Image (cartoon, rainbow, N blue to C red):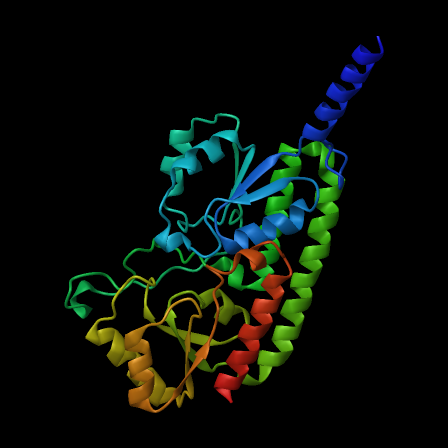
Length: 311
């Protein structure tokens, strides 16, 4: 009897060790939530807090433009309760993956729903010797809404509502977490309005077309070299940027930290101006992807570097 009792206690102890309730929530089975790329992961983790388990489909060091599906991605979608995306064509690979996963219970949250959007400029094919449109690789709508803190707050609220619908048991938690994060985003916007007010109407130049929402929010103008990072600039692209630099007396071109563009760097050298940095957050470090506050840190650096470039 004593041996049996001891064995029973041991088995119960092993079971408890294998399936402990989550120490933060007391919920033994938190919903599995998938996200697409870095800013969507940050926003979703901010809202989820301790209510859900959030996993990024795209590793933080990769962006949606160069995403290559892995064998485990379909299985991850099949096992998830929720999938959160930016939308507006940013994740063009996603529909096929979702279809292959065959998860009829999956709730897909499109965080761009209801947000005022900006169209991508269309240019005649004749402007490009290679016969490609200037906005090659993009749809008719620019998808980079997350770089405007006000639109980012709208994305967070849409994510909040989607998670509540999928997991009403933690509705209060989702509301509380979202309120705290959107408050931070609105404070960011207030600070940026003050910092950038002296430069309203000024132009800055970036490598690819990621900044129109940011520029619109703060009364700035933006030019770009190419539509998407993978695109090679044509002579017409280079000439357009040269004219912009000369006409606006720019002191810096803004590049992205995760990529070097030889044409952009050479152009800056030819024009005798410097290269500064604006991070569109399409990629980042794994550590940063786990800390929602890193969104604000990166955006503050962006604005600081932009102000230096204007000055």
